[in-house]
Image (cartoon, rainbow, N blue to C red):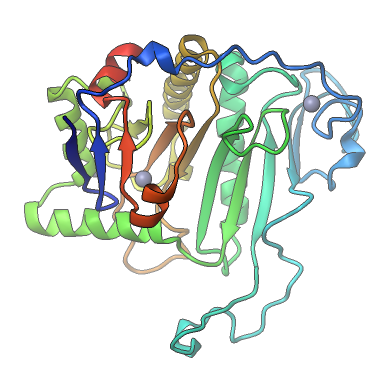
Length: 339
Ligand SMILES: [Zn+2]
Ligand SMILES: [Zn+2]
Ligand SMILES: [Zn+2]
């Protein structure tokens, strides 16, 4: 037997194989034995000149350091094969949707694409790093967000982490990526729309309500004073887990320092459990936050969050063709397993 479950944020259906469900342990991957860094890893000490010049770096405590040399604790560089670029100087016609013809809408690939190198350690994923280093990663996300958001042409900033080959990481050395885009992606527009519609209808926030519902249904993995970590009822991928601030807050980049510590704790706890219980599987996580604010009169009401998915099954024709995913890992069981 299976169950159709509706994701009220994305308005997508998921088929959850309630009875055919797989046992969580059977998703455990073979331990990944990471080879020693190949002679030339552009994210390892000593190969700094293999990346474009860094845009931000933090030196190891107490060390003097010149840009683009070793002894860094945190390093951010533009992607060498950047998907978007700020080299193009757009003219006044840039992204004027009104000027789009009926079937064609093209714009310059304007924007930026940066890489946040998790740490100098080639073989340590975020789940294996100490709390201060993970905090530094999160602080760096916020710091770069604020810098990139100053550009009036940037409408949305997407922070993501691809881990492992099946997770889409092209380089083995753990890293995250930040994309500054001149558009607001459909996923975000849809979430803004569904939150808005829910608020109009129920006078409440869909995310705040979802957290309450998750509690009633025993889907919570972990929580602290400021964050809830839970497996949503409509998870479309195995071990899909969301990290949500308890307070109704629209913007990730506005998170204060004490809350950042608690967010880091939540993220580290999740990635640590995933690493230990499933032998370091491939995964993705991404942060959904309100579009970049350029001082508009009416701020967007949103509830920011992080979505995590383990990449342990293949998406094929059904998923691409219909947008309907089949999840054989029942979220209720995933939550129990991760607790
Ligand atoms: Zn490396
Ligand atoms: Zn809310
Ligand atoms: Zn989302």
